[in-house]
Amino acid sequence: MRSFTSLCVAVGLFCFGLSPAAAATLVAKVSLSTQTMTVIQRGEVRYFWPVSTARDGKVTPTGSWTAKQFKRHHRSSRYGGAPMPYSIFYSGNFAVHGTNSVSKLGSPASAGCIRLSRANAATLFSMAKRAGLRNTMVVVEQ
Image 1: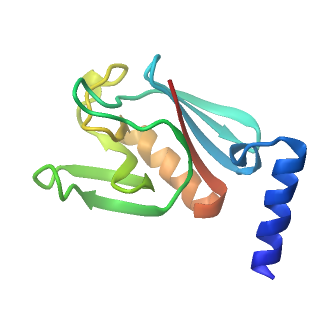
Image 2: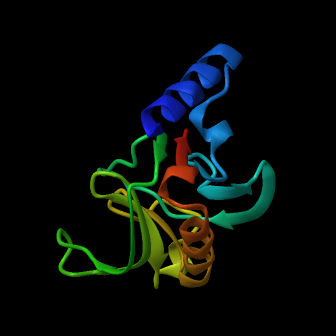
């Protein structure tokens, strides 16, 4: 039954020209050019926050993903155990997460993840947990 439902959703999205993000309950839409995130819940803009994405020499990939994993108290395995509170993983090791480096929000400063203030990350994390993995999308655009 789940496969049939997924097929129906996919066909509907294709036939009506809707993106998967349009079908998601919660969308975290990130603009690399403005270093901002727009949080859209059920089609309504709820929040507009500054973020930090990849600094020079690093990459934050563009595209659309369904959330893959929630980790409230994650620590980086690549960057010396750096705290990544309220992590929403969306593509491999890439995640939206909180940071203590709030003075850098609004400009590129990360190793590729999408950083938010801890308070904003906690809000998004709570919203995403309520929506569920399959209904949470991360969209990253230039």
